[in-house]
Amino acid sequence: MAILLTHRRDGRWDSTQFNATHSERPWSSFRLSPAATTDHPFHVAGHGRGPTVTLHLSRTSRPCTSQCAPFGNGGHLRWQSEPGVRATGSWTTGDGSLNAPPESMETMLGYHERVRGRWSWPELGGWVFGFANDAAESGQAATAPPAAVVFTLLQPTAPSDATNGSVMLWRRGRLLRHFPRRSLQVAVQGLLDRDRVVLVPPLAGMLGTPPAAPVPRRLLITGICGQDRVRLDFHARTAARIANPSETTLRPFSVHEVLGDCRVEAVVSGRSLAFEAGAVVEFAGGAR
Image 1 (cartoon, rainbow, N blue to C red):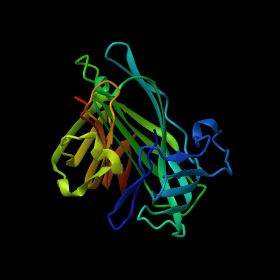
Image 2: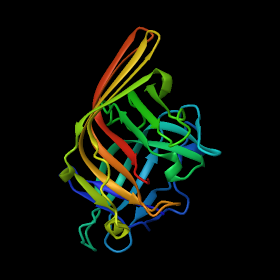
Image 3: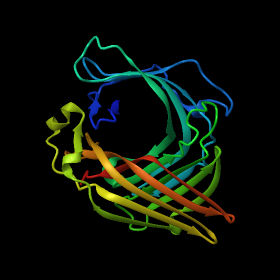
Image 4: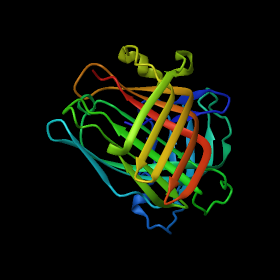
């Protein structure tokens, strides 16, 4: 199953159905050395009149160390995160214009991760995940962002102490500090207006999706390790709710892709770091 989800700055979300096609071998920075590049574009397209993208992707940063979260009856999730992925290319909208010419895309900063393990959606329970890249030097195609942050909070249904997560801070493409779950505090404030949440893909309504839990309007994450500290203050603007079929229940599992603005402040080894940038946050859950 593959889905292409796009968002326009005018506020509109577009999505393919569950059966988007993509390059025979999807691009992955984990197959490349830190200095390597590839000329093969990453292409994703919907069948019929869905959106399409053709991207040239390159890595500028190094990934974090692999992290593993065990839970349930023998389940586990292992992931590696890498911010600062740069993309250029073209895209078409899903507005029904079959012959619409592609539009060029300015250089944009993204994120890439490798996820492995043995898990299913109900047992995993849910997660909160997000990233932000400092785009102050976004025009310099070969340069890593001055700073980047990635956070993860996994919330399995069992055992009771299986909650796991981290906040990771990069500077100039290298991991600067890792704040583990025991050092984090997470708080939410307010709710995002449901009118700002769009259900996708177009066929998601056929799943009989019940209402999902509201998306927080503000997410605040604080990490403290000794004299080092980090603070992420995320304010949501809009969200797309992706309804996925669950492997073991009739209730669909929802992943909310939320866009907003994030303020990051940190002090590591006595040096201060701060930036404001657009951010992507995922709120996932709802299979039970």
